[in-house]
Amino acid sequence: MGDFSFQTGDWRVRHRKLLTRLADAADWVEFSGTCRAFEILAGEGNVEDQFLDDPSGGYRAATFRRRDPQTGEWSIWWHDGRSGHLDPPVRGGFENGVGTFFAEDRFEGRPIQVRFIWSEMTSTHARWDQAFSIDGGATWEVNWIMAFERVL
Image 1 (cartoon, helix red, strand yellow):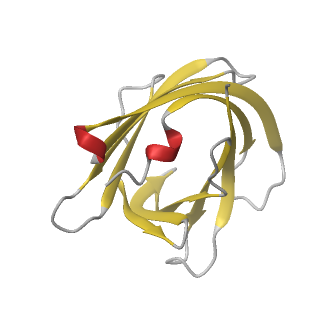
Image 2 (cartoon, rainbow, N blue to C red; image 1 turned 45 degrees about the vertical axis):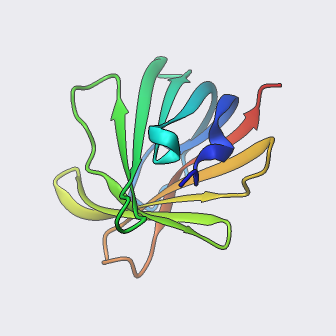
Image 3 (cartoon, rainbow, N blue to C red; image 1 turned 180 degrees about the horizontal axis):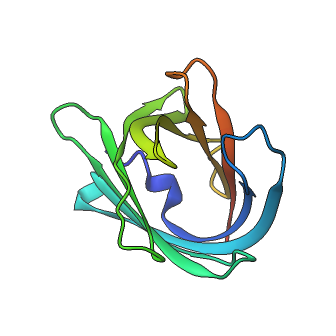
């Protein structure tokens, strides 16, 4: 319980996002955003409300996280406010200070694996990476990085 307690509070977020995914491209865009996160369910859940000031148009997004009390595994759902689509949950947990989460999904009609990694968590900073794999997890393309800095 409380694995996401590090995130409780207000954050400035620096986004670095690959514009063209799964195409051996290197066209990154950087932009800022904000995030407010809080625990629910006595630490067995976490909600995150984000504003992303994307150059193609600012938008809101939300994350809901829930820890399974029997297995200790976390499920994480991401919802981009620009669509009515709720992404399939990534599932996993924390080991040695790093959170690793996986899901099966589709991208542009192709089956993919999705990986989230939470790392470098301190009282003032955290890092989140998203990566896709089209070869069953043998190789990964990191396509989105969020660097969190706590608003004091």
